[in-house]
Length: 501
Image (cartoon, rainbow, N blue to C red; front, top):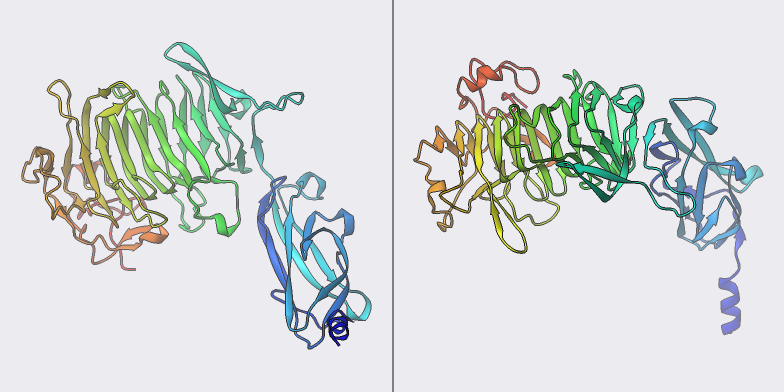
């Protein structure tokens, strides 16, 4: 009796073409040529009361297909006698890696195939669709005999230093990035000494994991984006992001490294850029006393940085109409002193992926080493007509190691900030909000009424505490907000003039 029962469980009837599927088309979204896709799944249902066997599951293009399947734990492009129990289901997993050079069109190509279940009268199929984009690939060389990948040699104050940073210097014909094709960078693409990397409006720059840009000593970066009419497409902005194009990766922090303005780089300018999903959006090192700011950034947005949106280390930064949000540590950190001037900027942090220990804005004047604490001058740190806010409290910290021989100069003017100290943890003179040397016409803890900060929509609404609190001459110096709306008559704090949602 036991033997008979087991035998009955192992009897499978041939499928009669009545399978059901979780979707009739599997869209593998967009991939770059030669970069593997994510793994997508299709669920196959046996709704009948019988155990069934599917005679064949194949890709229509057979061995020539650019798709890969995994059926019931087995990989391949053709499978026979695949069994599904009654009222049960199974998963089919699909991936692809496509070389656009093997396809008939250039630029973009819609690649399709089908998963075919059974044949003849019982045949059923599910479509597979992938958009493949061509790109300009920049990557370090690899020694085929040893497998060693090229690394960068840097000039630091005249000293040549070999590093373990994988990457290479850009060639002369790579010093201008256009909007004709996206750029995909593996490792760090370095701008050579004395050269300028120019990135034109509408360019798209994508980075593989642990990759980025490095602007070396004596080199410069010019990002020449422009105002976009469509704020969803951002057609004229320069966008820096990871190389995974699937929607599931669109807001994942930490997919790539940083834009590194290395010690000794000069005259770096960024206008109308979106920098998203990095480890550190921009890392600016040294040059605090340059006649012009080492970095001038305007009309730009930095989102979803797993560490810092902008990290300055004893450097000089001038920022206007800049929005920073969702950073795993601080959205802006000016460390080891330096010189910082932020006007009509929104420095916010609504990070909710994990606990964060730092506020939206952090300033300090020291660096700790194994042997000592090194002190630096904070020559100036001015925040004019700004919003400094977030989902924690307080959202700015002034971390000074006081010393008579070092400057720690800062001032907040006509800005909306979040700072509450019910336990009186911040009682030193730096937090004397009645001291007009450091604080003037401030507004504390009023809701900025961001549209949707968790989704990086940082425009302010009609109920914002930042409305009309800005003041000239700062608004006259930055007369248009980040969307090109005039602010000179009644300036709001932050990068946006308020609007009705």
